Length: 207
Ligand code: 5GP
Image 1: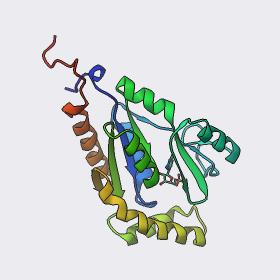
Image 2: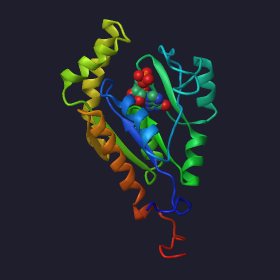
Image 3: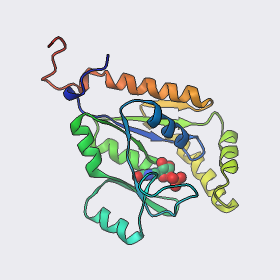
């Protein structure tokens, strides 16, 4: 039985990975299959890829609009990744934490550092790595969303990013999607049971 959410704060689950690790697939599946986990919709200045829906995958904004939102203090974190800006809207996250709802942030390492610094007691950070660098390169090539130069930049960056794994609370080696989702579900379940998240008003045997 799950602990009553009225008595605990919501958890900010952070999922980061070098691109090509399979993180997007894991986070989509997790949102569908792990109960009570909500997405955070980031804003970005990047152009939408085929099949991406504004307001669902991201909120796609212009450079000017991004700057306005950021300068108004409406972002919990933001970062420049490749040639675009990305940011996590602050209000939905703070509301979720206060109301005991759990959210999943699919963000890069720079953003993860900011969120963890500002919400040290409300985060659980998970890093995803592919089983090998060759696997990562294969996945990025199969995805085929970039030209060769952009791909090479992503690969270089992925190598550097992989070394950040030890800043995170949990590491998932994504060899089999089903295993990885089960591991993520286990992390979510364990984090929800942590006594440290319960408020002083919690009484286990109150009927
Ligand atoms: P993509 O362009 O492939 O969707 O995402 C590129 C990278 O930006 C990924 O590592 C993704 O996790 C990260 N990202 C997406 N949204 C945000 C955000 O709101 N903040 C930060 N810091 N990174 C983000």
